[in-house]
Length: 293
Image (cartoon, rainbow, N blue to C red):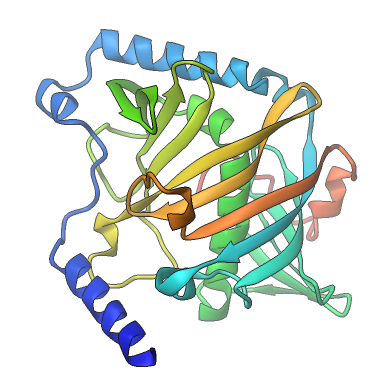
């Protein structure tokens, strides 16, 4: 079994290594025709409608939120990509909306977090800020920021300056409008990721988001050419907003079988404004950040 796993890793890395290009989520039509006024207007309209359909126009009424998460990583790729120390972890998260100020509490009662991208650990009530370049921190930095981005994704993507309609597609018997969101230029570049929101024509919700990974804690050969997909399910109302309480993440592309997920996050106990925002201001000398790297 161990030999099979090693061979699988070698094959995966070999396939990825064949491509040196960075991932590009534009459709053939957008690549050929470029961004038109009509595509921009329709993309922004559809994303705005999804944002409102999920109640995220009420997000600005709140400052912070918290939730309990059970995160499970599966299979060979799950073992390679796992952010935490166990295949299944129970954790508590706290976040400041629209920032990259967040914190995770582990089962051993220790904490890790970000304050405007400054990484820290709280171990036995002692706070230690660390260099982001230290290898032991890279996975947790990615995890704390990514888990926040996923929860707020419909709001964050709506703020992107480049929002382009990319047509429609069918998946699992449902029809979807596809909207490409990015920053800078629509062409792929290393400074910003591309995202494609799959908006369900029937419900108006963003069920899936396909994304690139320009900056990763894992850097196998050709990593710039890959990405992933997150599926949002189990929408539950919290303060008038429909918060997806199950996140399924797939490697590389959408999967028709939900059991083929790389990892699954199950959220419970989601609450807005249940703690003082100053709680996440560990070091008062650190400047206030925002929605940027």
